[in-house]
Image 1 (cartoon, rainbow, N blue to C red):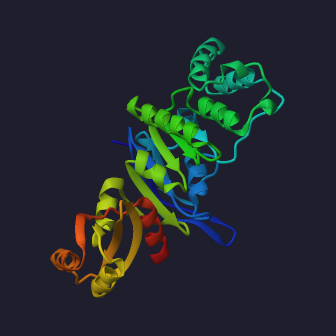
Image 2 (image 1 turned 135 degrees about the horizontal axis):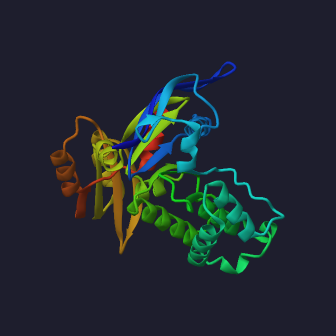
Length: 305
């Protein structure tokens, strides 16, 4: 079952078309990547899903019915541009936001202390927000976004400004929320994190949906013609021998005197030809099919759109 359906949504601002008949479906209990370069229309779409603005045409369906203002109570939104009241105490502010989402003060305080302990910021409960580091403030905003256990969570660049340790902590919490039944829309430029946590993605550019699919299936599809060879022997000789069968290649040090070459084969080249040529030229340590990264897919698809 899909928790969210966006059907031919269009939004114009003056002479600028921010969204051009965008459609997508977000399965319940999944992590869904909303990807695209700056200015692609991601934020406009997120604002429509949050009922902050309305589409000019098309429809958004939430949990089986047309999206209404009342549905916002079941959506948690962490925007890229964070905003906390700097002069308020951290705990008081977190309780305030929880009350806005319908929680009682007692319930909010209990849940918040559990989350604050988990994120290692309980000692900052009575500190003012202006005393927090950027990372700590982001942790607070993440907590108040998920605290009321909404059906749909929308994270816009949630890892921005986090060090690797805290980014990993946040990633694990997002995956745990998914395991508990939450649905997550995840907007980011970090393609490595897309590979780690997203089940499906939609890539938009210039307001149009240019690619949608399951992450694993897309990586498999875009891996056609990619091969990786680790070898010892004359590198340039191998490059020259493979040149007629190769569109592009990259080299990396495999250690212990070995080299790895990643190649994008020409359409007419066969695996047998590539392997035989390499075997006649160098000593092969390993030969395997390459795997396209989401970064490769992003760049290739945007470049063609």
